[in-house]
Image (cartoon, rainbow, N blue to C red; front, side, top):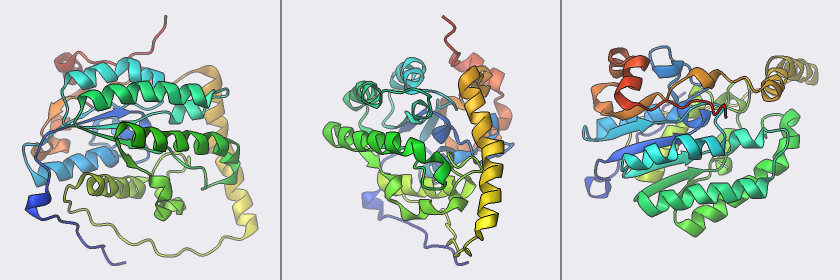
Length: 295
């Protein structure tokens, strides 16, 4: 497999260094891209992007407040104000995916809440980036969610255009039809998927990068029996536990903290920073802990 061409922009078109802040859920935290040397045990597209920012200009600062399992309302309640207080020059906002997995949902109401957050962001942050949410094309077992997903994504596209936010519509990127870009749960990106997402975001922002993306070789069609066995295993290992968590309300992230709650310079090396700043130290420095609302 040959590496793709490295993307570089003329210096006159490169953005000046600023402060890149990320808010959202597991998509932006990096779930699906495990790495023991990174906070919360995951890396993800945002950390990969941050490394490229640091290489492009050591003055770039990076903050990531995203946490897995967070609903749109929780992102708005726990992450919005801390993010704005940091006065970012660039901000990534992704939320709503966990709401779409709820047993009952009013998508129109969800989009109304989404717009409220987006209004706050574009009124304050010079450059706001939003995304369409995951698509369910990788398995027919998630097809019942498809109507919700399509409606929500259409709404996000309209709101981004209406309010002048940059949109990364990765549902239109045909590479993401490939199951290899998705984690075993088929909702989160895999390591390869996160790496490609980092490249897409960097291209959208007009920032050069040195990421090397290897071409995905064609795969052989699976026999229907193999497909049936794999789908059954998927139901047992992923779908049933997901439904159980939704019913019980038990979430791993209720005892977790944000990966990078205070500004860091990615040029210093994220792995080195993670090793020198434990979760407890970060909590003490930032005073920023996302706790579950028990009221």
